[in-house]
Image (tube, protein in one colour):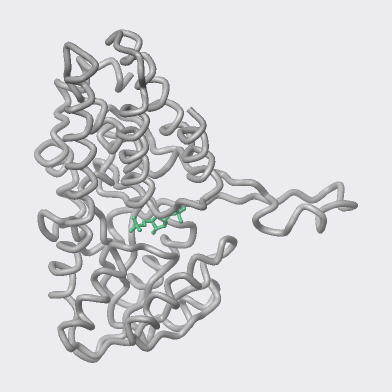
Length: 314
Ligand code: RI2
């Protein structure tokens, strides 16, 4: 229980972050938690697993990869605790390996859209988006990257360090300079925390500004997103909740003291409508955003009939 709580805390505080990593770590935690349950009573075991699943899913509301990963593991079957543990291991290991492969495959597929000499703009810190840039670079294409700081958490600094270690030339810019630099850009590549059934993309706050500026300048926008970032619940008409984080991330609490009329808003994500997205690059292929439904149904395995009869979705 202590370790479960610690993992949940780390996801909430963003020590563990990035939609893909959150999903893999949640699956890994469910596996480890299950193996630590000593009780032989299957009903009690199932109850404990459900409790752990709910705790993990409750940590961050927007990244759909998190409930999708948890759901993938919680599909386990077993008449006894031992059987259940074996099945959980199979499912969790399968999810984690599949996720790692997916990020690699997205790199290979996405790199085909990158030409030698391209300048790529990116936002925040997405391992799937970086996989595309890394693969293009590994193929010998000379690319230059423009990366935004991504306030308030400055994940852009992680991106420039990763790109630098790969030997990719990168410029860091402030978030408000996106439109200013768009004329120098050939391609915008960003990640996703969630993709809805109508092909809208939810990603780090500011993503929609990148996409709109790119659209205005007639530059292509590629979203790098594994299939488990597509949201089955949106098929039932639900909206993806946008996480609003602590205002202290923006200003620091102390700076607000003595300003009784001021508040700070801090949404972590925004929604980019599909008209501003040229391609979503998944591990099963590069698709137009209009094909999001097919991914949810065919590759995530959740059809509307199954969801209607599954209490987890209600
Ligand atoms: P990968 C991150 O969210 C960013 O919004 C990033 O674009 C997205 O997850 C996907 O990241 P946060 O955890 O899965 O920083 O591609 O809030 O690494």
